[in-house]
Length: 386
Length: 226
Image 1 (spheres, each protein chain N blue to C red):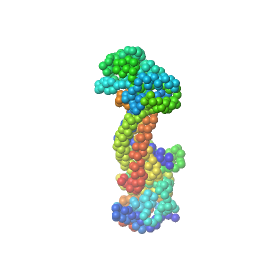
Image 2 (cartoon, rainbow over the protein chains, first blue to last red):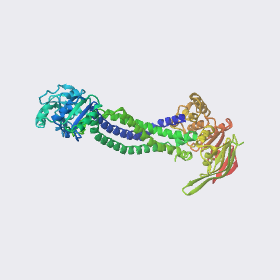
Image 3 (tube, rainbow over the protein chains, first blue to last red):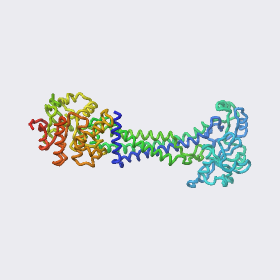
Image 4 (tube, rainbow over the protein chains, first blue to last red):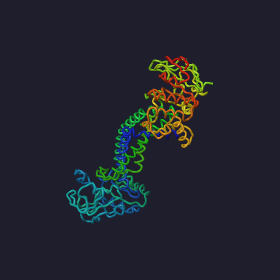
């Protein structure tokens, strides 16, 4: 049986050059579906990765009770002092988070650039931050460092330039990386200077804290609830960013699957048409093989295999186009805190495999019905080419 | 014992609500080593009868026994296997696979056997030599004349050494001279190689090569000696 399948499939494939035009419809159609699907999901994956990379299990964010994001949060020095005094908190940084309109490089339109005022402890809490160009900002001076993503997306934040932000002039003195996380979409300044210039004296948006261990997060959370002086919530950093990214990731994925599903319907019809046509042009040939003693199942399998091979070829091409065309491509979108988040498309091996699996599914559907027709057509009818 | 025995065979088709009777009450015995020509006007059921004998179709009524095997007892899969071992088919339009050369076309039925590749090639060469095309093994059908293509088809029909050759208008697409060559070849296979040949033809001159001629008219047999 397997030998027959192999032999008939080989015959089908040797026939392919005479059906190159129609066969390429399957390859192009399914390639398009896989390419679009993988590219859109790579966008979601990249955004998700950028957000999740920022989160560490032993780090937590403290915000005002009921706040969903840093932008809507606020806390005062007394609350900061209480949290900073807890023995389970090994480092704490009060941080001011705001946004400013800055033109994007791509189309000069204004978009929200995230500005973060931080204490020196911020760098201890986030050891992944590294200055890759220039130098760190100096305390007490209107200096900033810009994340690599912010530099890629916004005008005027490259090292050495000055930028007007909320009626103040800042000098960009360096560029930093943060392991590709969402922090790279921000510009950072000295907290005290930022509070002064942006008229937020004494107040911060949130606190970043490093915990003695990830387990103490629930203990601290309960302590905050029990302490009447504090109207704060403590959320693990990874959970915070997961929540921030979830809505947009789901939206992108839904859009991606929707577009891919619509395209898939078209690709299936293209595959069906091609394979029906292939079977039709080979009706007499297939009937002759069956007359000679080749079974119906090998005929079905050979037609399905041909469709699968064409579909896989299309899938590989689509996945390759998505990989070489989009992997690492930096784009930005509005993140959870109303600021632009720059991230790279991430065409992961899992996505490539997923794309090929879609191609296999489409090829299977496109090949099965024509195959069954080829095998069920009475030999005597098929020998007449009907 | 006849190699082919048909008892009370009838065949009808449904076309919409209409039933078309193609064959009725066919009783036929074909002896081993016979060369039988089936003649008759178009629509008389010649090809249908040939297809029943070759196991390509099944009767609506009656039984078809070939080589001692009642074909109605076989499943589709078993029938396919039986055809590959017992029947050689020769078609009017040769039905060769255009992407394969003569050698590979002839080898096709042997792919269903357990023969090694080398043995398959050897058998195919022998069959091609028998039909006089030993030197055309590497040619594809498109590079051969009609007569040569039909010879390749005949080589394919005999390569697995079946006892029975069923030939549907084997000279219908050939000129007179080439047709004679093909008919001579079938006669040689019949006389010298002991193949039983059942041939459908419109051509009385082709039928003259047969040892017996049977006429079909409106689905019924009219016997006539050659």
